[in-house]
Image 1 (cartoon, rainbow, N blue to C red):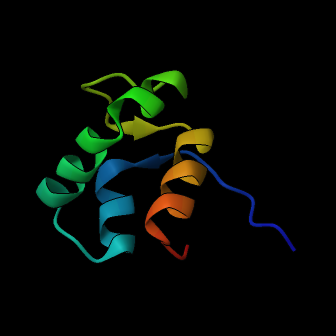
Image 2 (image 1 turned 30 degrees about the horizontal axis):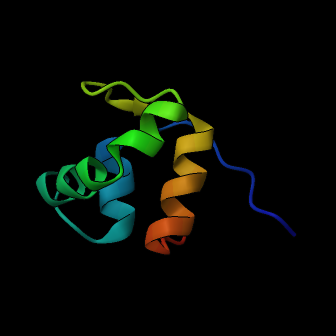
Length: 63
């Protein structure tokens, strides 16, 4: 069954990935172009479901 993704704060997703928010932000910077296409602004704290799905698949994060 497919996982239903929901909006999440960056710090929540960083915690799920097992890294600090600072490290997670560095990871996000490497994917800035793709994240902008998904509607994530540079200073966004809340990530939309499409971005959460992309990041979980990219970084293999289990929610």
